[in-house]
Length: 493
Length: 122
Image 1: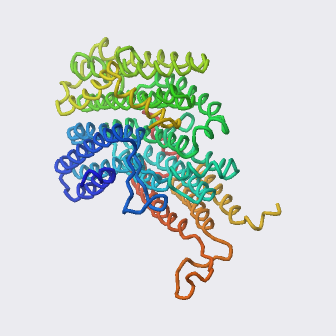
Image 2 (image 1 turned 180 degrees about the vertical axis):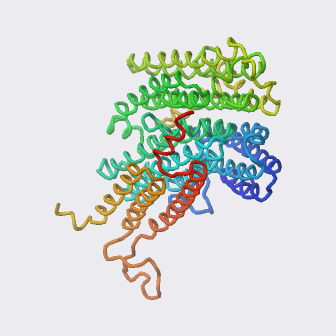
Image 3 (image 1 turned 30 degrees about the vertical axis):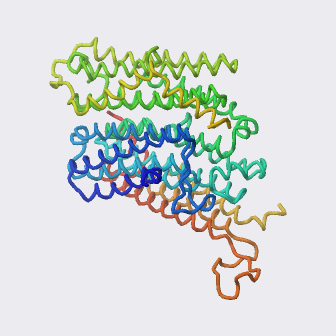
């Protein structure tokens, strides 16, 4: 009975729990409730993925109104996979958040923090499950508005300006998406994504449809921080509370990439995206520049959080290269990297949160000698860093392997070379942290730093461990991703 | 240009949209940026609202005697959609203004260049 309603429970449970968190007032109570909710959401997501893998896409009609008139939640291989990523990261980050938040935020703000985090989670999950284009916009704004609040809660006053900048850029991006959806509605008279996909070929490549395509693409790339629309990201990640940075880095940009995939492949269809617009000539150069430029900029950062933020933009570049190719291998690489990078970067930011807790900051100078004082934390960083570089036996290697394969398949040696160059650049910035932590002596007056508490180390190590595990055992990540790629390209789902 | 009068609603949308967009980019005062953002969003509201108008259509309310009498109705769906977007816009504005209050408390100014100058020395 209840199993039939899982798609909607996924959204409703966190959405209802959010205001309750606010009413609880006590930070620890709100934390307990949010953790319970996020675990429930994770169970639902895992359940949905297995259901989809066994018996194909699930269609859920909200309020019993049949699509295309009613809102439909449609869950297929691609979004059940994204759903699992978001839910898993949400649960891990919430398990981690208690100590980190207790230190970084005053007690009076804590229940509000968990409220915003749950709303953000609900929004991201909503974007992922919905099969209705306008509904997607609403959920996108729920998640965006709450993420602006979360970012502004950082201790540094620059968190406020970062949140404001993100608010302006994010609103422009979301408004572009509404314009695009409106134009599509004008051309077809429907908002259901599958229905849009069925009717657009008849509407042809009219000016309206082309404008819609342009607005949707620019809006989504703003949200996912594709170079050169990434300016909101480094500050937002650098000054947000540690748990928020980890959560957003691992989920928000990933969900935006999912939105782009949905627009390209479900609504416009592979033929339109690939042929009429020559997507390759637009996305691949931008993505390649993102990889090279942002990896280089990352090398010169002294704030490690900021360094990893730039590295995130570069990693988004890798995903966009894969998506830009538009081939089965390319899409598989993009989706696998989406998964692997969520684990790796989420883990790295959680590790950094441990450093902030004990060392008080994450500037490179304050990391000096931490390798000896916080061995488990820093070793976690090393493993995550290796995955970021793409060393064999880590998750990063698997996705880059597929990506290089996709590039070679296309005979695009330049991009293949850029991917390898990006890895070398990553080696340099990861090495700077390792050098500071292990080879430099701790300064005389350094605060006494002990190992981070277990309640933070275990979640961080779960993600770091997963990023190593999925470097060896790839049947879940690559298996599902290649199935999702086949599904997008119109094969059997 | 023959289409100009017939498509004037779209021209208004485009002019408003670009005005708002320009204000967001060009103004350094954070409140003015929010005002620009509002104009930008409002242009989209008008786009949706004018989209629902059907030539010769009346308000989509069924009154006794009009059912099946070949009355043309305007399309109510875009209007309903944009109600949601208006609510989202209000939330965004409120949040933006709240952030500006906090920024003013933390920096003592709401001019973008002065804020950047204050963070520079670190």
